[in-house]
Length: 172
Image (cartoon, rainbow, N blue to C red; front, side, top):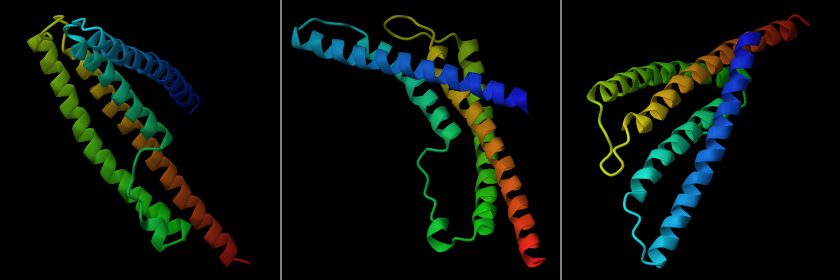
């Protein structure tokens, strides 16, 4: 379990640095593009570079949101029940379905990235390998699947704890 915590901590550090670097880079590129347009200087291909960096920003951000469970969700169960066991069971079902869907997307992304690698596609202006912008998609879905598995394990433990609490309260 310590290895998983170390890997998670390392991922958090790497993801954080990628977010800082790419967030700053996207902001600087958009600002530079605005200044160049104001000065009527042509920066041909700026959108291409911004897109490459933005893919990393968006998808690493999505991975961080799934790690911290801060992504957008439409959880309405809390409106209907305060029972922790019911909430845990619903979360377990939600996470199990999410793992199945996310695993399929991860396989699709892997196939897409490997296809990109075999095609050797290049961007139109700077002739950069297009795979640079598809790798973060695969990374995102891969770690998202791992985080969903982590959350499913936590749900199973929560259900076990609520069962133990119910039994100890019933025995009093």
